[in-house]
Amino acid sequence: FLTNRSFKTMENGNYSTVSEFILLGLSSHSEKQELIFALFLTMYLIGAAGNLLIILAICLDSHLHTPMYFFLSNLSLVDFCFTSATVPKMLFNIHMQILSISRKGCLTQIYFCILLANMDNFLLTTMAYDRYVAICYPLQYTTMMSLQLCGLMLAGSWLIANLHSLLHTLLMARLDFCAKNVIPYFFCDLVPLLQLSCSDTSLNQLMILLVGGLIVLIPFLCILISYTHIVLAVLKVPSARGKQKAFSTCGSHLTVVILFYGTITGVYLNPSSSHSAEKDSVASVMYMVVTPMLNPFIYCLRNNEMKRALRKVFTRQTSHRL
Image 1: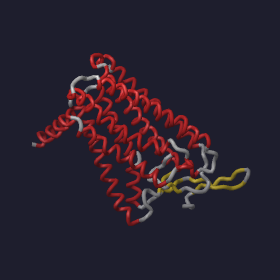
Image 2: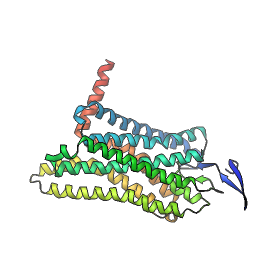
Image 3: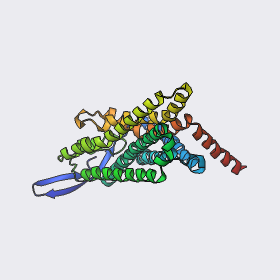
Image 4: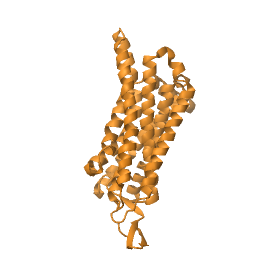
């Protein structure tokens, strides 16, 4: 671990600066690596296929060209990119029996992980607002959720997500890493890297708690407010069937929201001193691999329109082959 370092000389003496990091992954036991490789490869392929199928189904079915499915297709694209930012590198390292990642590669991974996690966060918020408008203002839905507004919401989400990820990446790039370079994760992340730095990380931790906290808290409050209004509106519906239909349109989204916020909050909104490597590693697997893999199943199994669209895709493929 100590051989791959670049050495610099400063006025106050000599010290070494880490030029690459060691990703330990989920287990340091070599006998478990084949099992981990097979498990993550399977989850990655299932998640990638599921999310790409959703995008394809929405693109091909004109009945799904609505704001709800516009945001869902973008969520599926982000989920596919999210897992692709980390899992292929992990699989490559296991296959080649290489544990290292360059400092530039580590910073690049941090940038895209924060960017795509933010986009997941913002898209879930826009989808909650879409359901709020659809249920609370059904007659004004087409006007309130216009194509222009959807485009602005998506563009604004990408802009804020890019600025936030750039902030943390630049703050991380200014730090020095002088001794330890072992990360007990399968990817580069803010918290374990800050624990390895020999520089003052107080500004980085402050930005994680303040800016990162606001980035998570404000959208979460927007989702909470949206669902509060949705519940109040649904309770006013006289028929039980009408209530069930209204709640069913939100069930898939609400399940994904619980999965996403339940895992990501514990990793990023606690002081670094309270973090456990094992606990954080499991949580990171949940929100970076498991949740993106489950999202297509959650939306497809609970959504009849998505089921019909997917049947059309498979029927079309079968007819082409025949």
